[in-house]
Amino acid sequence: MESIRNLVGLAQALDQKKFVIGALSISFMVYVWRKHKQNCQNNLIYANTPLNREILKDFDSLKAFHPTPYLVNKYLQLMALVIHAYFDKFWPIKYERELVEMSDGAIIAVDWWRKDLIKPDWPLLVLHPGGAGDSQDNYVTSVIRAVGKAGIPSVVINFRLADDIPLKTPKLYCHGWTQDAREVIDRIRNSYKLSLLVGCGFSLGGNILTNFVGEEGDKCKLDALVSIGNPLDIYQQSKLQPSWLFRYVHQKMFITALSRVQQNIKGKPELKAAFEDMWNEPLDELLKKKYTFDDLLLRYLAPMFGYNAEDYYESVSSDRRLPFIKIPSLFIHAHDDVLVPNTVINHNKYASNPNLLLCLANRGTHICFYEKWLPKAWSGRVVTDYCLRIHSLHKKAHE
Image 1 (spheres, helix red, strand yellow):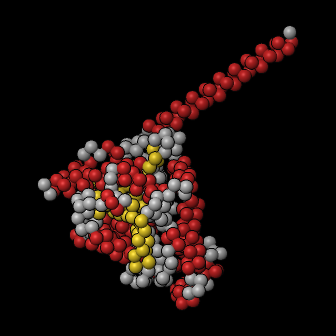
Image 2 (cartoon, helix red, strand yellow):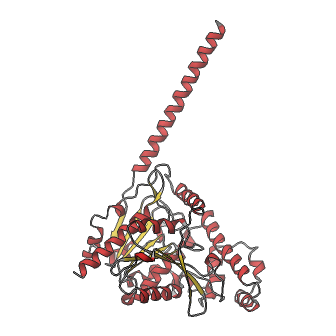
Image 3 (spheres, one colour):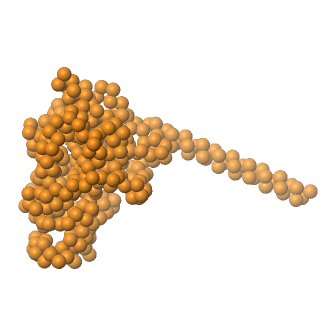
């Protein structure tokens, strides 16, 4: 009898534990669902012009971002990007690669996807990755795959040194260096004169394309622009982001670039001497150091492109070129971006230029916007819809 009573007591205890575990699980799921549903409407800032009204008409994908229910904060969204990046290595996009020589002798890898889809009066997406990124990064490939489903071809402008492309000159890239993008876009435009070229830049690549579009003004050879996670005001970004993640990302970017430089200068004494003369330090010693954000930009990148430390931030920040943009341009930012604080965004500049449209998503993070239960990049859906709207506007203008 005693053993029976013990078994009954154990069963009751197990039932209580199951009840507690079940109640906690339900409470957690309710919490996640509420977080998923709240603050999903995006804040849109723009001049109330016929152009923007036409673009925004039925542009439902832009108006709200519903993140993956279990990726409820910026760090989980960022973790999803890292996981996607790992698995993407097993299913890379097969590009048609073109090596393009720049006017200073440098070699740029230009990766084409679905050239067979290129046709007159149809969008061709021109992508520029973020710092230390390339055409196989998940945030790039997810957009390419998304637009591809709508029959839109893509081409990626890689950075110098990307994907083991040999280094020919003592020059890498920086926030304000637009010449490589300019020469490649000129080449694309000359080859496909009637295509609708839509630029799409991520993070540093977004800053470069925004600078380029602002510099070109009315003569810009792009027909439209999408900029995602653009740092905009580099000085404010450097002062407002002391976080360990910010420091880690930029340290890793520079060390990666230095490692590639070191591999490329083997057997090239003149190129090695050019780098060491510019920086007044042996390259072997540079790899052992830790850097602040200011070190990276002012000590190493500024002299590479002829900037003084005093004027680097102002010269390379794309925020100051927003007033001069003359083509339809969509800017996408996350309110809780881990690398680009919301405070660097000057809302008035978007409201005063009739060609600009700013989308501030309440969720997501730096170039990471994962939605649906099986996470997919929301940015791919938005860029696809935007390209189709640019095509529709072009078609109406020529009817």
